[in-house]
Structures are given as C-alpha cells and as structure tokens.
View 1: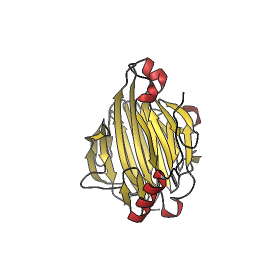
View 2: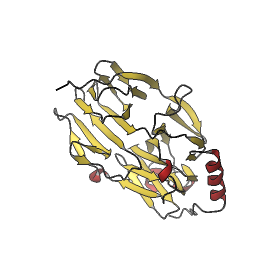
View 3: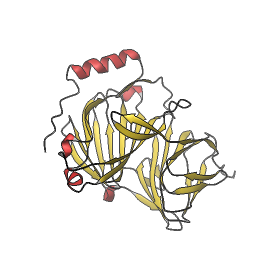
View 4: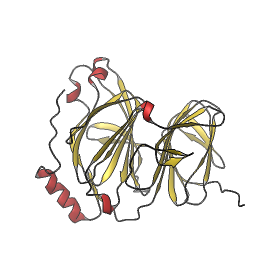
Length: 293
C-alpha cells in the first residue's frame, strides 16, 4: 500500500485592502497573479463597525443582482440580515452560514441586523464566490441557511479542533448544502496545540485561509492570520498544528474547467451571456426586492 503524499504549498497570498462600493475589505484573491482557483472566484474578508444613527435597512450592502455563481457568507462576528427577491428573509449569527446559488438570477441585500445596530456591534464576515458549471447557471436560484446547530461537526483526535462540514462528504458525514459542483468546505476553530490531518479528494484544487490566529502546515511552516495558502494539485494529505487559538477555512473543489467571463455581479461563460444578464436584470426578470422590516 502506497504511503499517502503530503500536499505541498504552491502560493502564500496575503490579503490586500480594496474598496468595495465604499466598504474597505481585505481580498485574498483574485490578484494580478491569480485570477481564480477553479472553481473558486473570490475571497473577501470584511470588518465593519455599525452605529445606531440610522436604521439597519439603510446600512450594509443594498439590493443588487447576481447570476451564474454562488456567493457564500460565513459570519465570524455579529449578524447578517439577508433578504432576496425570492422572499427569503433571514438573519445569520456568529458561526452560521448563508449560501446562495444565484442561478438564473436573484436580487439580494446584505445588511446588519437591527439588533446589531442598536448595540453598535461589530461585524466580521468572509464572503466566498464559487463558480457554477455552464449547464447549471440558468437553474432557479436556491438559498440555504446553516444555523450553528444544523452543521455536521467532527473533532480532531486530540479534541482541540472543532471542524464544521459546510458542504461535501467527509468522515462519513454529509454537508447540508446542495452545491452545483463537487466541493469540500470545512470551517475549523481550535485551541493552541491542536493538530488535525485532512485528506483531500483526488483531483480537487485546495486552499486554506487563516481567519484568525496562526498555524503551522507540515512540510511548509508558519501561516499567519489573513493569509491564503494555495496547494499544489499533487498529494492528498495536509496536516496543521495550531500555534494559538485559530480559525480557518479549508476550501477544496473539483475544477470546472470552463471559460469564465465576469462583469460585476455576473459570472458567465461568454460576453453575450453577460449582456443578456444585464438586460434581464433591467427588464425585471430577476425579481424585485422591497426591504421591509
């Protein structure tokens, strides 16, 4: 029996601060060097302080359209109030996930909750964009909310790391999300000295983003907070040792291998499809979102 090979690090990418519609966010990718890590398109790490000088529905990110991919929000601190043109209305709290398969088109908003505003609370989120295969881009939209008590969990052998399985199959557990391509996403939190070995499915691209704290990757070295590790395709085993209290995302997926054309909130395969998306939005085919209490 052949010994399983350790995955080697290909890139270590620090986040860069960018302006996203008036909000300063830290972007791990895309970069000038790397446009995407198929099927993943973008990773933003946002930190926002909200205040009670205005209602919550007048703060945050207002209604905007999406088509052709899945924007996924991980709530690290605070709360996110999601509303969309398919009548979903949901507040996600710390440790929870909002997953939107935008499909043929949907309009949504991402606001702080009114409770957050009243308490002058701080919000920290990760937003991940995941491409959808061409054959599924025009399917009806789907919204998923993962509450803290509805996420499958497995712990490291030393019980120091808690791993939440967001989507995919791992350790005989099945994620709750119906993703549009083959994915494995794990959200982990652990204490100093915690050690975990992950086995990555063959043929999957793999990344690890350190949200808070720091860790050491076997046969590589130290990775600090707000850094993205991109692994080589070869190998199937990746081991981490936490140097302090640490939180990280393991993001793995089978490459879709299709041409990608981007324009703002639309991710399609051709420029013609982008123009069609813009037209459909203007014609109201993605619905209407009226933000009520």
